[in-house]
Length: 171
Image 1 (cartoon, one colour):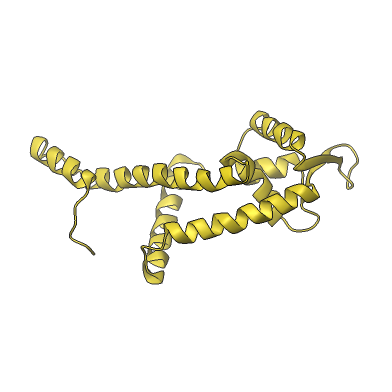
Image 2 (spheres, one colour; image 1 turned 90 degrees about the horizontal axis):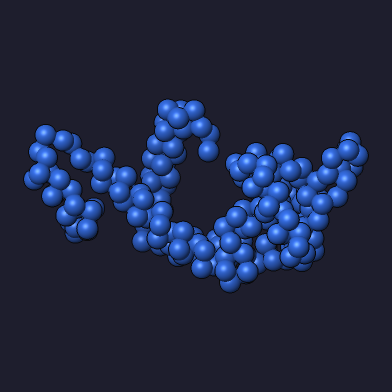
C-alpha cells in the first residue's frame, strides 16, 4: 500500500485534532466511497453519452440485452431488475420507445399484459454501448492488480450485504 495522502486524509487529521474523542476511521472509508462514486459516474456517463444514452436508459436496455433471446421482459421484471418505481419505469420506457430502441408488445403468454422488447436498432446500440462500457470499466480499474480487484470486490460485496441487511433493502 502506498504511503501517499489525499484530501480525505487531511480532513481526517483535522477531525482527529478537533475531536480526539471520536474514531473517524469510518469517515475516511465512506468519504472515499462517495468521492469514487462521483468520479465513476462522470466517467460512466461520458461513455453513455457517446451512444446518446444516460445511465437510466442504459440500465433498461442492458437489462433487456442480458436477458437473452427474445430480449423481452415484462415491465414488472424490468422494475425488479432495475429497482425503480413503476412510474419511473413508464417514463423510461416512453422515452426509449419514442427513440425506436424498444417496443411494447402483447404478452404472448397471457395476452392481457405486455412485454418490452429490444428493437433491432436497440439491440445494435446496446451491444456497442456495452462493449465501450466494459472497456471503460477496465480502464477505470487498471490501477489495481487482479488480486486487488478480487479482494476489493469481495470486501464490497460483504459490506453491501451487511448494509442491505441493516436497511432491509436488497438495492
